[in-house]
Amino acid sequence: QVQLEESGGGLVQAGGSLRLSCAASGRTFSTSAMGWFRQAPGKEREFVAVSWSGGITLYADSVKGRFTISRDNAKNTVYLQMNSLKPEDTAIYYCAATLSGTYSNVAASYEYWGQGTQVSVSS
Image 1 (tube, one colour):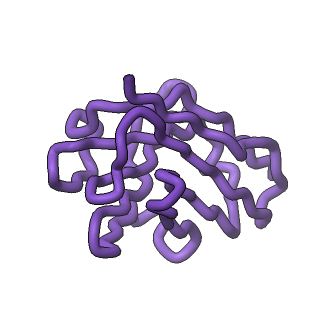
Image 2 (image 1 turned 90 degrees about the horizontal axis):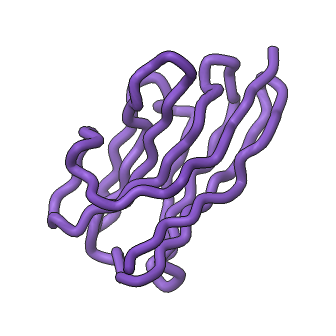
Image 3 (image 1 turned 60 degrees about the vertical axis):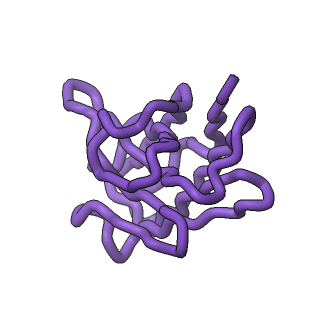
């Protein structure tokens, strides 16, 4: 049974930083895509970043230059370093993974999801 467990969320002031972690168990994702999505109250879930085999990464325009996705395949873990946080980054952040062999910025492309971790940025 595949499980994704996020950690690292919290409350931070604007301009601050947080680092999210997502540990996968039950299956190795070392050659697969793992990414992050977020959902703010009253809004649809939106793509944040994805990391794929070979070091390929993709970011949403809204976080480019501020967020960095990385992974430790030995630990089956993906990270999201978030710097220069803004109040509009406030959301529940979800880790996602797929064994499909491709990477995507579309939520429907991912078959495995974590429970989410809350990130709140105060102004």
